[in-house]
Length: 97
Image (cartoon, rainbow, N blue to C red; front, side):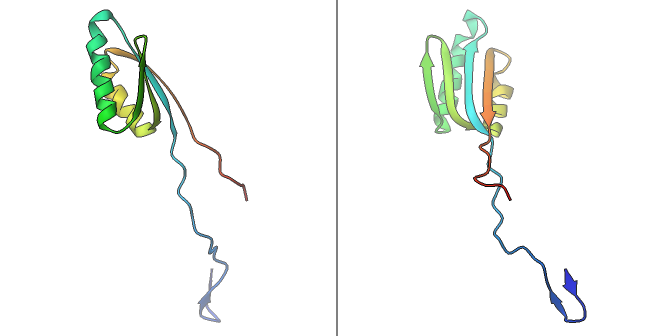
């Protein structure tokens, strides 16, 4: 607030503001049909190029610790040929005021 009689600002919060933590989580993908299995390999290469942690096991690809933006990009690019499931969450702040 500005105090016009004293020509100064008062009542400002001086604590540094922190950025809101991003949603992060795990994405799993499976081929919709046998003919789409090469797309699963393409998704694995796509994720590896972006330094994401992947695991391919029994026809299911798991990508760990990805952001919402990465998940949306993957879904837009591979969602027509793969069954994609994603669980994202945001850790609560360390404390509440």
